[in-house]
Image (cartoon, each protein chain N blue to C red):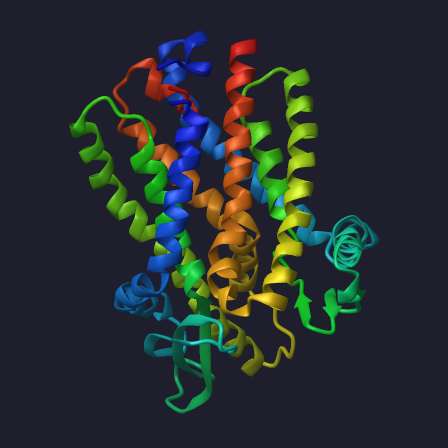
Length: 178
Length: 199
């Protein structure tokens, strides 16, 4: 086994580090969540959710399967003749970005490493958000029997787990660099 | 094996277990949620009738459902509204999957250390269940109370909490709780003092 940040700190600091990380992680996530919730309905929120996530998702579905004739309708529904995916609050994939930022802020690392982690992580989170919504659309369209297991558990949790694995990888590299 | 591969395998196994066991787990845990929600309902004009697993709104889903009644105030005996709280069984199993996978998968030096974590994890896990699925089931009761009080479009504290959980807060709470227990029951060596296990 090797160590992470513990190797370069005192015993007292080491003992406090997991607690500090967990608390900072929770507080930072809560602050980011509150900030994003406060922006609900604003042009910023519409830009992030609709222009950055839902529109590209719909375009990709339409490009990959032109027969779907997918379009984004009002009420944030990715509509096609065979399936109407209503993207509700909390289903847009924003949580992955909030988790990523909170984790990177809470973990002790240099500014450069943080920026690197944020850029790489945001790219991954963005890809996962769009992939997840596309997967939900196709599941609803072609395999609705699998909807329960995939929508309720696998597709919300699997991208977050992948983000967690990315975070572990990034934090390990950040410690080695230090 | 590299830690990220090991955690990836553990996560995949946990997800597969969750897919297979979500509904049985929800059925098994329903009486516990009923007990917890009875506690949450204290001090409110809410009555929990039963918590059961039932087919959802579409034929593709199963839900944990809370059936209850809301009175206008604590002093009145007449039921004013009947409500059903719903949580998909897939969401029900999220807390046990994340919490126990992380806690039991965390590197340990001895079997005794794992036993300590298991023992410390049980009460924390029960609290997490009360704070997550337990509160999600209660949400319609709070909304009904607010509507009965004259607010046609209520956003209660329960709504804010529910939105927090649904926006990743549940995962944050589960992870933070598991991490704190792993740290608290560590072996006072440099391995377990680290924020993330990197063996």
